[in-house]
Image: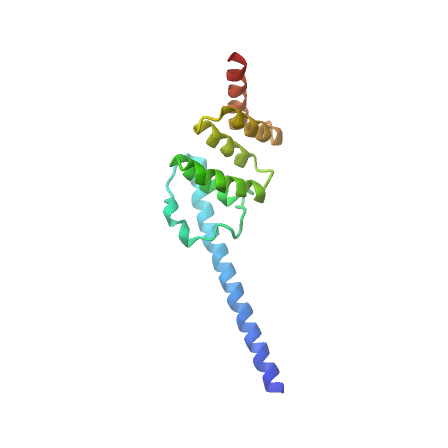
Length: 152
C-alpha cells in the first residue's frame, strides 16, 4: 500500500513537471515572439514571417507584455498582406481578450478603411478615441475622417 502511494506521488510529480515545463516553454517562445512583434511595431517594419506562426501558441499568453493582445500584433501583418477577412476574425478575438486596447480598435478601423467601409471605420476610431484621446495616431485619423464626412 505504501509503495503504491509512493508510485502515485512520483507519477503525479512527473505529470506536473511535464505540465510546468511545457507551459514555461510556451511562455519562452511567446516572449521571443513578442520582442519581434513589438520591435516591428515600433520600427514600422514587417520582419516576422507570419507563416512561422504555426510553431507558436498565440493563445498563451493572450496578452503581450504591453497589454496589447498578441493577436492584434498578428493582425497588423495580415492587414499589410491585405488578408482582410482573416484580420477581422482575429481582431474580434483580440478585442474580446482586451476590450480596452486602443490599438486593437484602431487596427479594426484601418481594416474597414482598407475595404472601403468608412462609416464602420469611423465607429471603431471613435471607440478607440474614447478609450484614449491622447493617442496621436488615433486622434489624427479620427479627425481626418470626421472632417472628410463633414465636407461630403
